[in-house]
Length: 217
Image (cartoon, rainbow, N blue to C red):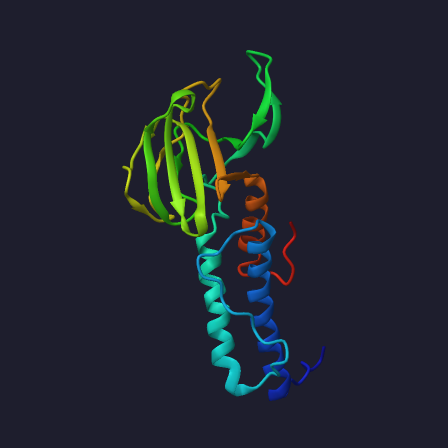
């Protein structure tokens, strides 16, 4: 265009309101989609509230409360580089031929790759755990837990508070495993959820650099 369209102050205000509301509602949709029982749920923004300059600060705080919740949900992959070698769901063991439900995903990565928690939390377990070999479990907000198994080494201890820049350990082949990989699980209210669904949302957030108008599940 020879000239950019002119936006008056009223139009800018409406756009600002629409952006803030969309972001808050998209995060709320994510929480509801996975039946996450929030420790503290923000009050709903009044449907009848018209865009007004005096309400911008309140709407920003409303959006900010949902942003804090978003940052507490483990949407990131624990590995920087990976590919899924065994998905979530029913699978047949190559050695035994027994078909069982696989409650996580197996992630292949580079040799002894470092892994980090998918969100901040408290280490609820760090040590040896039967066929899982070396395991780290992290308890997050809203009764969400992530599990990292078959590690070659563990860098944290039970009770540690960990953030997304803390190395939990390294990918390994301990326990009952047929090759070096990371077995990764997400549990919400003690029920397993397909981690690939969380990765899909995390990729959308990282690709857009923010919260898109519509999350694809």
